[in-house]
Image 1 (cartoon, rainbow, N blue to C red):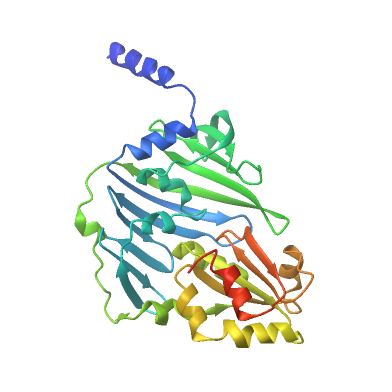
Image 2 (image 1 turned 180 degrees about the vertical axis):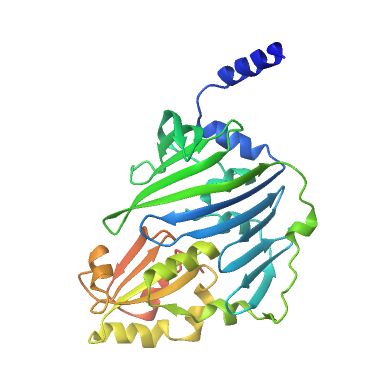
Length: 320
């Protein structure tokens, strides 16, 4: 017994401090993974997640509002509120796209997508909610504008994580807090089967997602996070002539939703009604169009409106 304990102690010492590479390796080498956790931006409401992953290309994500399933050949998304769902063929990068937002990004290494960090440093042993975990932090980009901190258990899988970034000049903090984690084990294909609930209805992607415009950026961010899409934001004013031309020429036409809804959530912000949002993003002229990540960070900005060709030449760089 003492020999076994001593061997365990030596193994723990040999493993050394937590690192991003050890976390990447733990998930990358797993055959299956399950977790329940809460994702919450400080000061906002939380989203509860229950995920199941299985090599090589199966995933199930369930939140307060939706279920998303990739069964290896097909993707199904179910909206709990409307009781509608759509199905589409699963492409090779479908899971990567779905997990490319802050709420889910941390689990990407399971699918061999390395979680990268710059200027990595050990935080040592940290007590988080009664657990002694090994912490590691790093910048997520070379410009050092986004920071992540992971808190790993003995299996080198994160039980807690914290992301910090600037959102329109305002600092935001996202905290991930797991309630259960299971590495490996047997899930089976039934875990990734979609059984339509009673009273639900199958619809097309366009019917479910295509024509919807949000007027609350936080709601748009939640929708983008849940669906793995970016956000297109139209900052406008009711008195603005070019804003009206942009809407009539492009944004209000079915073509815009048909082409862009698979990669973007749409949001309109009236700068006179939502001065707080306009100020946060330093809007000085209308119309201003932005493409944002699901966390609200800026990918691209275009000020003014010239013509449909000019607008399409810009927007199609970021999704279609």
